[in-house]
Length: 102
Figure (cartoon, helix red, strand yellow):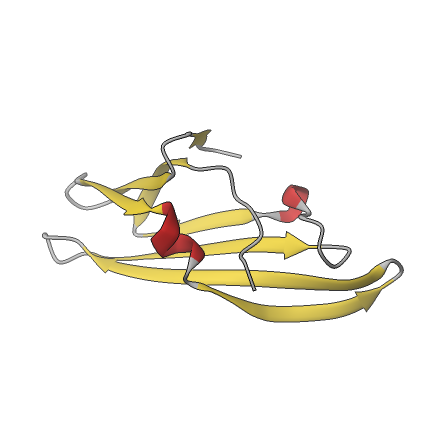
């Protein structure tokens, strides 16, 4: 993990071009998840939940955030496989990731 975890229930990142800091509230992130991949494994089904959020910075830079949250076995958060990728920006901090509500 190359970012800090915060308790403010927000995702914080900076634009690569102008270095402006942006904040997205946890509820906006959590409502953006879709179940994208599933695979049958030894202890049941493994599900990937993916959220993609695009932001256009004031400088015109298009920033895309992809967050993967894994569930395995079904109903259990497999946080070892979670990831956050920020294209055209740098992740500063994020709330502790959790499974989205169905």
